[in-house]
Image 1 (spheres, one colour):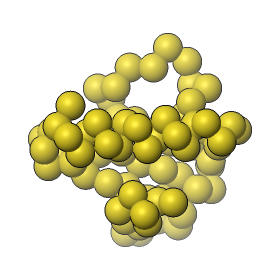
Image 2 (cartoon, rainbow, N blue to C red):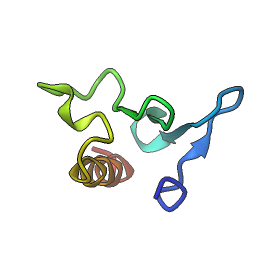
Image 3 (cartoon, helix red, strand yellow):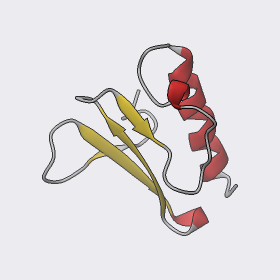
Length: 74
């Protein structure tokens, strides 16, 4: 899924993927496979961390939606 969304492996790390969005000032999302964590950066506010892990399949839908919004410049 991460490669389909055009995430790239982060150099010097194992299992960490990232994607930069030049449309929004090189904002970056990061996914850590080992820690099973999704980081939406410091500008996207989340009330809880329930969507920032791999515990529910819906969390990957949230990741894809955020990805699409950032690609459109939101």
